[in-house]
Length: 304
Ligand SMILES: Cc1ncc(C[n+]2csc(CCOP(=O)(O)OP(=O)(O)O)c2C)c(N)n1
Ligand code: SF4
Ligand SMILES: [Mg+2]
Image 1 (cartoon, rainbow, N blue to C red):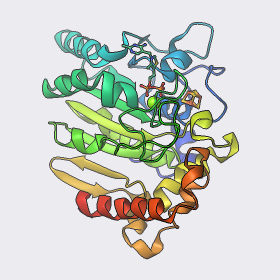
Image 2: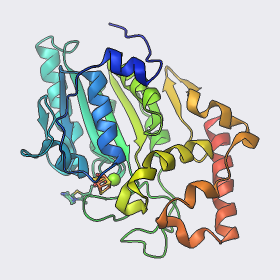
Image 3: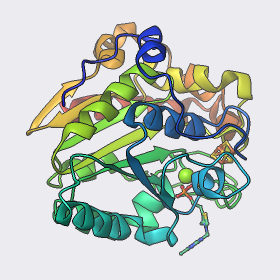
Image 4: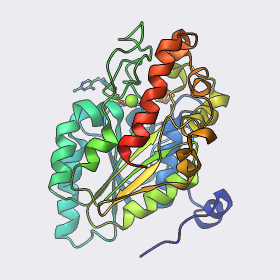
C-alpha cells in the first residue's frame, strides 16, 4: 500500500499517533541516533521486526528494563545482523508474510562500514527484502568513542587523539554500487525528509539502505541542546548531501536542493566550530581549505 508523503511534523503527529519504542531508554540526552530509531519505528509501526547490531542502540533499545522496542527485536552478535535478517526475510517469504511484516535492520557506522560490512554486502546481493538503517555517528561510541570507517578526517577520537588521518569510507556510495532497490542519505535535523525515506523503503520488494547522520553528544563534544543545530549545519554548509537513489536515478532531496548553489551555503567553519572534536583545526587555514575542497569534490562526484 502506498502512503502519501508526509508534509510536516503536524502531519506526522496526526497520522502516526503511536510510539513503538518505550520511553526511558539509556541513551545520552538528545542522542541523534535514539531519535532516528524512534522516528523510523513511528512510521513503520506495530508490524515491524527489528534486528540490532551491537552498539549504543542495542543497549538503548533491546536491554530489558530500559526503553525497549514494543515490537519483536533481536540483538545478535555485532557483525551478523544482516545474516540473521536474511534468515528472517526467507522465513517471512516462506510463510507469505513478506508484505505484512517490515524487517528493519539497524546498524551503527562501525557495524556497517567495518565489522558487519561483508555480511551486509552479501545480504544485499542476495536481494532479501529488508530496510537497513545505518545511524552514522562516525565512531565506535558504545565503547567510548574510537575511530570507525566513517570517522571524518581530522576528528579527534579515542584512537586519533591528534585528529583522524584517514579519509572516511564513502559508505552510501559503496552501497549505491550494490543492487539496492532504494538508497537514501538522511540527517536527523530533517526528520520529515527522513521519515518519508523510511516510508519509501518500506514499499520496496527488496533491500533498501538508509544512512542517517546522527550527532553523538559526548564524542563529538556538542551540547545536548545544540544537537539538531549541529546536524542541520552539516546540510546547510553543503558538507553533507541528502539524496535518494532508486532505479539507477539519483535525486537531490529537498533539504539539500538550495545548497547545490555554493553561494547559498553557510561557511563550512560553522559546522566544525560547534564540535569540540574539531577544535584544533578552527584556526588552521590549510586544514579548513582542504575540507572545503572535499565538499566541492563531493558535490561534483555525486553528480549534482
Ligand atoms: C566482534 C566485536 N567486536 C567488538 C565489540 C565491542 N563493541 C561493542 S559496541 C562497539 C561499538 C559499535 O560502534 P557502532 O557500530 O558505530 O555503533 P555505536 O556504538 O556508535 O552506536 C564495539 C567496538 C563487540 N561487541 N564485538
Ligand atoms: S554515546 Fe553517543 S551514540 Fe551513544 S547514546 Fe550517547 S549520544 Fe548516543
Ligand atoms: Mg557509531
